[in-house]
Image (cartoon, rainbow, N blue to C red; front, side, top):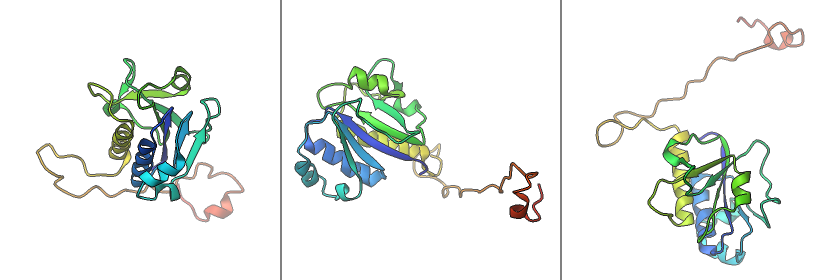
Length: 189
């Protein structure tokens, strides 16, 4: 899968949920996990995540939305059940994304929603557990951006293997540059 992603939770209070998010994030290849305004026992988080995710996926904690720092170029995507949110199956995932979910018994704060570049929702009848929601978003990202064989029209698995990636030719945009000539050798356009 190309790009990178992170998972975050605002106002989360159950160590088991962030531990499960870390475990799932580790399994799906998250670059980091973060919390904003969380009330957690970090020792309990480490006991819950039996995959050792804390040794492989950094956990950043921020006291509030204003203090939250993301890598330059990273798109913040809120996961929230709102009327105007984009349905997850219709959402094109950014290559560089941080997904932030709300607390166990609440919603993303207005400040967090204002900071988000996109708000998406999992089209369910009601909210699911925050760790389950994180896993659903990661699975959808993997299906959307991974290199898998197309789903068949008939029931069952694909008829053939996933297509191999085809690399294009080298493209030199500045062929006439004098400083590029020694590097190009006998380059032909």
